[in-house]
Length: 241
Figure 1 (tube, rainbow, N blue to C red):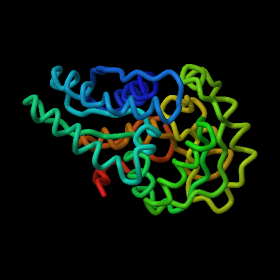
Figure 2: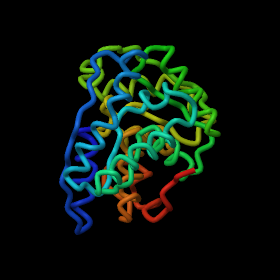
Figure 3: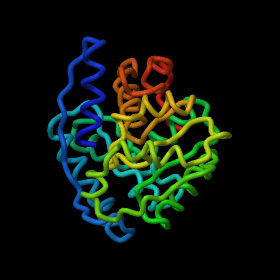
Figure 4: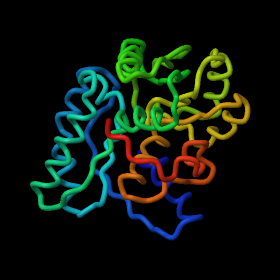
């Protein structure tokens, strides 16, 4: 979140006049396991209050699996809850969760079936798959990298994702989710993957940036970030369904 989201907004700055500042408040988590994810989500209201002190214009909740592990459709409840926190602090701002953003971006692209790469342990990957299926997105071939250490997820070489995704069957997929986690870096290889696979490739980070730009009322585009931010969906409505 703290690397790829700013990189995506900086890429936008090369083709559009708006300029951005970035502010972070961190929820603690060391290992990507259910109990730590629940504790992390419980801390989200504190973070929303702290960020609204800075009068930010949009908030992005980074952890996709923390949201999805709290129950089907939870991104809607989380976004409402955290937006209410900002309003109570007299600094109302929209909230985009990476979970809701991935769902929204896939619907925006008309992707009804995806191939997916996730860094999580198998049970959490199954949770993500079930969540997407409940939202009307079929998940075909997929892989769980099974990396529980959050820092090791961040240190994963994005070039390795190309090897991983080449081994998956994406024949019937409308799109490929190269990273279903904002902690797993993939931005540097998204366009290479698109060229190889011949279909749209996105990540949770790219989806989050797209939905945050639309929440700001700005055209959603960023060079070098694949089809979703190519400008093809620059003016599509923010998906809130």
